[in-house]
Image (cartoon, rainbow, N blue to C red; front, side):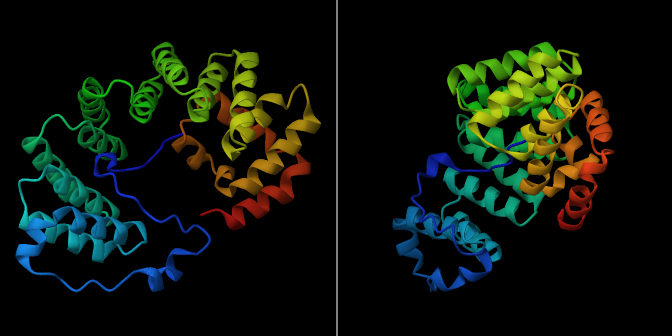
Length: 286
């Protein structure tokens, strides 16, 4: 499972977490920004960055991009503003522009690990695996205990089927952050491909204890179908309700499910007890 977040931790921006409204209904909470004078912006660049970041946070992607561009034009030697612009460009799906902004930020300050991590995520989405790995290594040299980056590196090793090296990375993450359920789940994915079914089941169960996410729920259902059919069916039903997208082979493949687990899931989905759930999931999946 990938964690696809391009967060600028070093900006240290405090945002209001309003989670009960849909993004389209949040426009009323966003103040109207009249552009201040050039001298004011030069003296208060951090406030401009906060405003741009808030616009991005509340889904005002084009407006946030415009404000980030303005901030960079007024202070092009601030690497944090280039990083903010890169995030705005990523949110607007301007991938090449984002890569350029990241490179500009790195030229100004090559010691900011987040720039390398963001660059790696872009390359990974473009399936440029070796470029992604190189950027990750550079970032991890600067910040070796970043669990998100370590997870991404483990995922690359999983893609390359370097299972033992991937397990080493995931264990490193768990030692740093014991509730990182995604790493525990991915250990289960590896053990299943290695025919270590009991270890796979154990890891899926551990992941579920931390987070009842659809991925370990369905993976556990597939792993248990031969030994506990009743529980397997219940778990599969719950998983498809939690996230209907897991009905899709392609979606599971994006989450790095291997051939053996995919085959086990295909067999599970043939059960008559799950046909209504599968039909509903196919209707609601994105």
